[in-house]
Image (cartoon, rainbow, N blue to C red; front, side):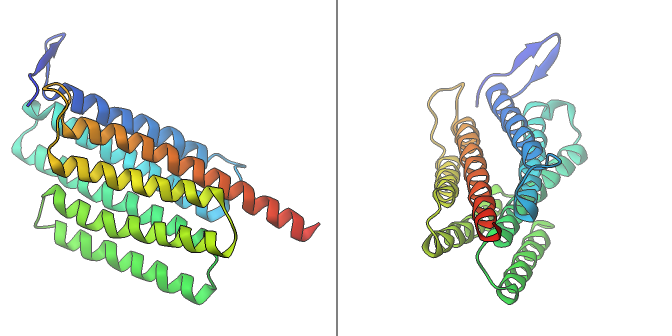
Length: 229
């Protein structure tokens, strides 16, 4: 574990983990706000993705606080913050999948079924996490959701070529690579461990997702303009 640092009398544990978590927060909230900006094209799909970005930003803020300021948290405070973290991660994944479903070339019946399954999956996850706290369970929920997003984007690409969908698939692959790094325990340095590397990979994944969402949105708007011209 990285040594603590003291800044103006404030002790920060795992400083690099805290800093990279807060970086994820900044990027997630910035990109989420851009997707949710009034007048931004993209409709329901982009809005759901944007909410997912805000949730992952909150999860990172809570996680970074849990890592960095544990010395100032009571057992109850630390427990509450960590529980909020795992639920925020779960919600971020569920909203991202909801955004993918909303933007997929599916009929209304199929879309309703997939939205229902997504909600049920989060309910199962949320119920399980009431009595469990391990991050491995977060990944058990996250990986199937990311896989579903990749499948939906591949299907959309098969229906109509979409470079944006490929960017989203790339975001899924990067995100899952980050999860693998986090589970591996691989560290580059005493001041840069597996969590720190995971957070940086997560930032790259968020940028890929955002690029894909905006390109898919632009293509859909162009297609709609062509068909209504």
